[in-house]
Length: 235
Image (cartoon, rainbow, N blue to C red; front, side, top):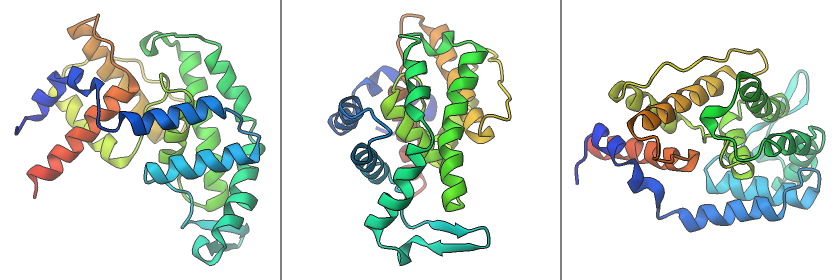
């Protein structure tokens, strides 16, 4: 059926189930079974599988060899790149400490996060994306959001350019209540903007039906469907 964007928004419960649920569940289970971001084999498996599954792979990027030099990854043996460049990034960040702190909050609803908690969530995203930017010379906010989502699925929204464009379409169609804006130098400002807009959409659904549970995964399903819907209609 040729739904309008507003009709898609109103059918959010439909996106509780997706054809990709089993694929995603495998990724969630992988991160639950291998939570370590210090163990090299766990890092290799998670970065490779999540990155390639979500079209956010780390290879085919520039790797900084010195301040004045950058070598295309295509010229580097791919296995060596992951072992020698990717693994040390994670091992030097102590991501497990950040992730475990957020897990210690329990099942706190996203809309109940206070400013300090939101800043910690956004800071962790920038810690990871910033480390890859320093190493590769390119932004990796999309990969960082996806990697963190599968470790903390009820906290992180999945960012990419399609989702952001669709999110702006959603905000044109709904009238979300005002949501505080958290500005901090510790955050990647584009992801922070995306995150806060996602909270505004959750706030809208809560106002429509406070018993309607919307997860980051369901919102992502909706945003991707809106993006695909726009592509189909523009053919």
